[in-house]
Length: 394
Image 1 (tube, rainbow, N blue to C red):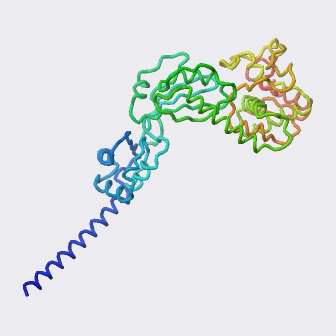
Image 2 (image 1 turned 90 degrees about the horizontal axis):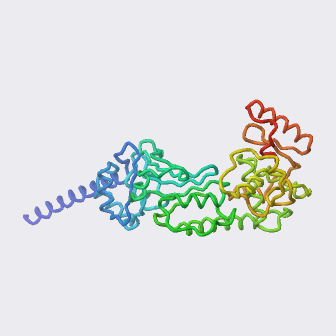
Image 3 (image 1 turned 90 degrees about the vertical axis):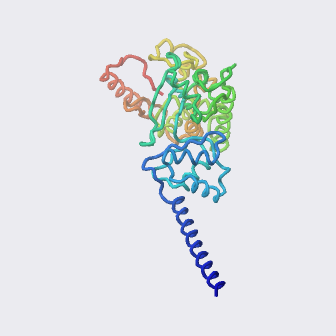
């Protein structure tokens, strides 16, 4: 009888323990998969070489999760304990532990935290310090400077040394290779000298994630590799009948298209104008090539072209020489390269600014002269000089 009571009591205890265990598992599963405690977005930072224990404690301290043990156990159960990726990641409000594990083990570019950007622009280069505001999910500018005219703020130097800081170079479409090199010289997180300016047009406008200490020459090599790959891909897919003998000629045309319009939808139309001119034996007569011949790509021409400059016979003065200029006049983006190799089918051979940022396209000289007259009137109303050479007059 005694043994029967003991067995009965043991069985009862075992059942209670199993129920408690099942309840604990259910609770832990709910804690791991259910909504998290943070009512705001959180910037979760994973330091290089950080352990799962350190990350879980950090997440508890910043209020992103409620229990470090459950977080570690769930991560182990998913077999992701060794998959932590260095970086700073923005997780949404009330993100579950499971969601956070997915974010910090997937990797990829950092999406929050401190960010130092070098922007290579057509008119100027800028170095920016930004920080993500977790409450809004937006980056807020903390400091900036123009390396050509200003000293770097101490805050930017401090940020570059900050663990987990995101370092990027953002290269705009239509900048010259000289402008890129000047920007990289001012990048506080890059190292090494640049011996030669890369060939014009050979660098791909894009955003480049870099690590502190990367060499400038290595980054330029990556830019060149990307551009070469883009050009090869677009050249291979080109239609028949275009007036280019080599990919380099298409790149030259793309650079002209890039500099002639900032309106994305116009690129293929602008390309059609210049293709039509080449096919009809007309000169390209485009101002950006003349400007490049004056500046050699080193900065911008902050004035209108002079009649003497339009009359001068230089390799880049397409008002005076036939065909394409000898080299690209900027680094075109993929869209401009695509437009040069896939121009619209039009009869247009002229275009001029229309006062809205775009252009009016014309098939005949009579139509073009009327469009120029309208543009002159707009210039007059805006206080410009209606006797100066027409800018943007393709």
